[in-house]
Length: 194
Image (cartoon, rainbow, N blue to C red; front, side):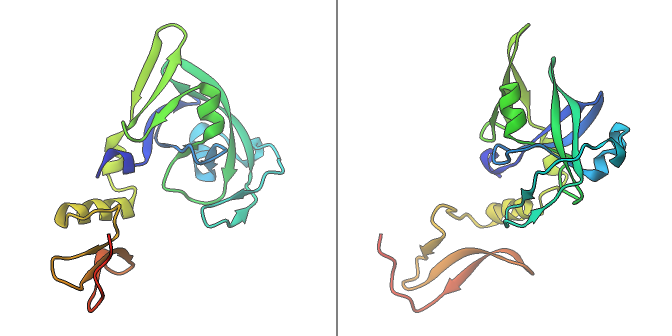
C-alpha cells in the first residue's frame, strides 16, 4: 500500500514505558487513551480528573468519556506533559495523539513520508520513522484488504467508475462486507463521457 494511505503509527515513551501503536492523527482535536491502557501506566479510574468534554466519533456518535489524565510523553529528548481523554471503548491503537499534542510539541507529521519531524533545542531537527512493523502485523483490516486487492487487480482509486475495454461495461470499486474489496460490474450502460 502506498505510504500516504497508511496510518501514522509510532513507538514512543509514555510515563517511562515504551508504547507501540501510537496513532498520530491530525484530524483529532484531543489526545485519546483507551481505559484499558491505564493499568499499563500504573493508574486507575481513581486517578482520573472529571471534565465536561463530550467527544464524537467519525459517525458523529457522542459519548461522555471516563475522565482525563495527565501523562508524560517523550519523543526523542523532548518530554511534554500531555492531557489525555480516557475513553471506555476498545480501540485498534494504544494511544491517539491529536492536534493538542502535535501543535504543543511542534511536530510535523507526514503520512506521505511515514515519519514525523520535530525540533530539539540541543540537536536541531529530529526525524522519527513510523513503526511499519506494527502496521504490517494486521491492525487495520480494511487497509490490508485494500492492499491485497490492489496487488491483484490494478485499479485507479481516483477514478472509481471506469469503462472497461468492452463497450458499455462500467466497473465500480466498492467494499462488500462478505467478500472485501471488489469491482462491481454493470452492463448495458452508455459509455462514460470524459
